[in-house]
Image (cartoon, rainbow, N blue to C red; front, side, top):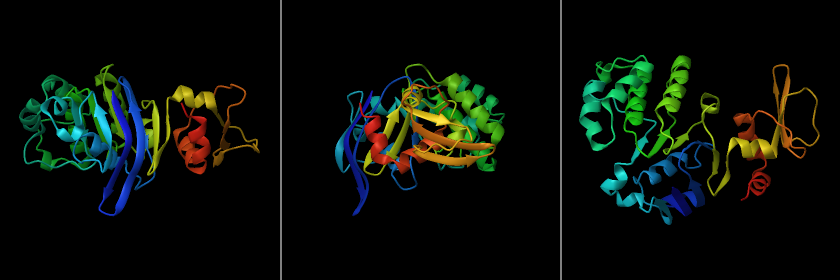
Length: 275
């Protein structure tokens, strides 16, 4: 269980996060969405203990991440958007660095590399960016940590690789682990992220499961214009519109439309999903 209370962080005089409150439960793959500059990457690095909060607290199973105790570090992995091209093969990298995580599995690493159709015996500094990204995703999943934080993991992946990524996530994530995936590519992860978090610099605008979202919001895909729409967008064959689900109707949640609805109705959405 991760508990974030009144979290704030600034770079000098530049305030990035202000009074963020958020709970992350086990067994979930959270999608972390937000506009550029709201502090998604900063939040991930704070959770990983790489930065110290200016104010507020983070509690990960009773531990403060910034203390960076071995018992904490062995249970978390942070995958940055930028991955280094090491002068060694992916196999050697995994053998050398995997020993820092007690549950790391070399067999799992090789299985995931196979899913990605990437040669683990290729030198990492000779890989394409997409191949390198897949090697680090494979390593991250092979650590088998309780908490896994990923920053834009599908950046640099082609369309087949994104499908392979979704397969690897669903197959190699345990039921009691917690994943927090920051992304701008909502469509890449639409099938696997649940709950969905939408972050603002000063607040969490939304932290809800797909089921909770579909109960409170209705996503209409007809060509009829709805006067009470919170958000509407033209799509081929008509439009997608989002309205309050006052009649208990079922609909398929569209994450991009949800994101735009939230940004255009911040206070209304916050109040609608208050616990």
